[in-house]
Structures are given as structure tokens and as C-alpha cells.
Length: 284
Image 1 (tube, helix red, strand yellow):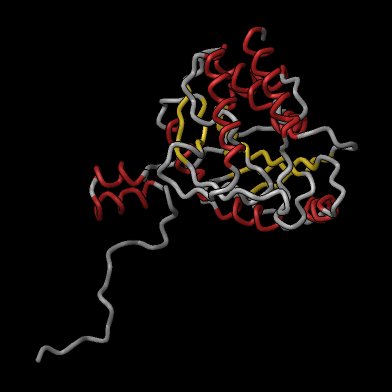
Image 2 (image 1 turned 60 degrees about the horizontal axis):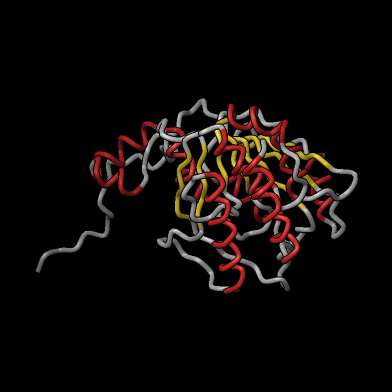
């Protein structure tokens, strides 16, 4: 009978190589081949690239700390800009404590900004956009509906030089998606279709949180933004389309919340989105 060795086989893979580094990618190529790496979304993220993560926060005390931990775990050098929109549930206290910490991580530079009165998601995003210094800017909600582990997939079309803007779509169909409200789905598809008719884009999810931009796009658009609430989504899309920036979509997972769990968008925001689609579809 063949003797079974208790010593595990030795591997030539250097497990200390940072994910998405040139060393790590060379190992993946050697182990899997170029075609498999392409299909799996493996590539090299430049070590000198800085990602700006803008996180609007309003009454998210139950999720903000875990969300921030998940963002920090993404193996990309980042500046994380949290904008507290005058929360009333204790989120502000959590963020003030965070802003006073002196154990700065150079790989995850955290900045916390505070609104003195509640203004809305759009206003919080504009505040964050105007503070960005990264090469690429991504929007991240403070709840746990969207998974920061998908950042590398979302950045790839921009790093590859194919896109100036990337949208993460909940409706492309090949990622896990929590089944929730039918009429929300219908409303999202109707708003996206109407937006497309004005912008001549063929997006599947205009209302998505995950929007990624080259910094030059944000520098051009952010000072012009007007919408303070959820109307920011069609406004951003219309301004992007008008300037003819190359746009890509990437499928993303989605773990939606119920209203009992803190979901905030409502039917009034849908009505305002209709107005914004027409307003910014016709005029800059």
C-alpha cells in the first residue's frame, strides 16, 4: 500500500503577494493562464493609483462601522470620505469618534465631513465630490446593500482605458440579488427607460448607487450639481451623457433592505426623479 505523507505539498505561489499587484497577477497567470485570468476579472491595479470612496451617511448607526471595515479591507489604496448629513440616530457620534482617532492608516485615509442640517443624499455627494483627490471616484452607500468587495470589478474598465464612467447594474442578471419589492423594480425600470430616452444611453440601472468616475469627470460635473436628494441620480446621468463620456455597465450583487430595516427612498422621490429626468435631459 502506498504510504500517505502527512506533509502538505509545497506550493510555489507566494501567498504574501498583494491582490491585484503585478507579482500577484504574474502568479495567477502562471497558475491559471491568461484567458482564465481575463474571464475571472484578474488584472493589475497600479500601486500609485488612489481611489476616492464617497460615502453619504444619514441615520446608519447599525451599519456604518461594518461598512467602513469592509471598505478598508478592499486591497486598493484609498481615501474614504464620509459625509454625515446631520444624522439623528447616533451616527454622528460614531463618526465624530472616528474623526478624532490618531491611528491613521496610510492605505485607508479617512476624512469625515459634517452637514449642520439635513440636506439629502445629493448634497452629501456633492460635498464629498468636491473634496476628492483620487484618480478614480466611487460612490458607496452607508448601508450594507452594496458590497465593497466588488470595487476591483467596477474599476477595471476605467483602469483598462475603456471607460470614463462605470455603472454597477443590479439588473444585468448574473450576480446574487435579494428578491424584494416588485413595484420598486417596475419603478426603477421605468425611470431608467425614460432616462435613456432623453440621454440616448442604454443603461439597465440608472438609479444604482455604484457609479464610478475618472476624477476629471467629477471635476467637470460636481460644481454644477443642483439636486439635494435622490434626484442626483438622473442629474448625474444626464450630465454624463451630455458630455459624451464613455460609459460601461458591470453587473453587481445587491442585498436590498426593507423599510423596517431602514430603506429611505419613497414614492415622492420617484416623482421628483421624473421631473429631474426631463429637466436635465433638456437643459444642462
